[in-house]
Amino acid sequence: MTEMPGVRILADDLTGALDSAAAFATPLSPLPVLWRAEHGLPAMAAIDAATREVDVDTAVARQGRFTDWLLAGEPAFKKIDSLMRGNWAAELGALAVMAEGRRLVVAPAFPFQGRVTRDGRQWKTDAAEPLGGAIHAALRDAGLIHADIGVHDAESDADLDAIVTREMSGHRPRLWVGTGGLAAALARARPAPAVPASAPTGSPRHDAPLLALIGSNHPVTRTQIERAMAPDPRRHVRLSASPSDIDRVLERLARGQSCIVTVAFEGPRADAALVIAERFSGLLARCPSPCTLFVAGGETLRDVADAIGADSLAVEGAREPGLAMSRLRAGRFDGARVLSKSGAFGRPDLLHELFEEASSGR
Image (cartoon, rainbow, N blue to C red; front, side):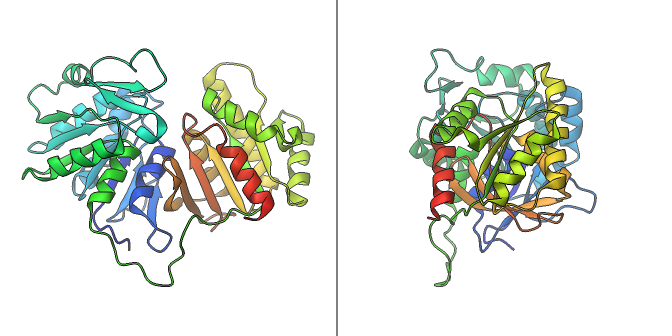
């Protein structure tokens, strides 16, 4: 049982579920993160409804399976994409119908990752144009005309803290809508739990070998790969259809050397997703459990979990905002540590630092 009772998070993808849940979790009180619901849902959890990459009707239907569960949470948190991708407006329109009487608090900024909200529009701090139109207009087009909605600008964590404080002073029940930035602000506003004297401090060490499975082709992740490869290009293996590529990965891991694995494929994105899943599955079928698994991309993390028979993750916190630390539950890699992030998240040197830390044993 976690020390943050009542938190329920509904996310549009798996890495988003993890980086939002991380704010409410510790190694001593992990929070379950699920993507299936065959056996019922726990009182406190984060759920990946996998709504981002599908059509609007499918997204709304998938979300609808979890709406009653979500709205019974305290806090109830709907996680949307910080780049405003996917079907977020239609999903909020459907939620508002079921959440009648609640105030929707919309604050999608994630300042640590360079996502801010200015004048009701989402921005990347390094971009000259906003990420789409006005948030209010998108919600109005989705049917939220008479709903009680607060769309909040924020450019810092202090701004998000102030939003939470102000909104919590009201008496109406709320549905919080945002990203890992707002989730962290909500967690900071809750009473701090008592920490046993024996509790570990600091970020856990990530021993070699670290196996990095990269399904994202986002420029942010490509830069991270390039920086991590710079000291030794042999760290990177691109999986083709040849079994010899898997052999190269396994040889590195057997020597205790960390490895970055991507997939060699040129073609439509939909086809690429299938090929990535197939090749990572082939690798994992022959792979022993690494000391640490690093995965970039929510769809990739789902594919990896399915390939090794995991049925959930237990998130234990965040290495830094947007980089969740969790452990696999069930399957061949049961208990293995996982670091995960969105393909669009992270500092340029992030992967390089993790590789150097693993190899040095720090």
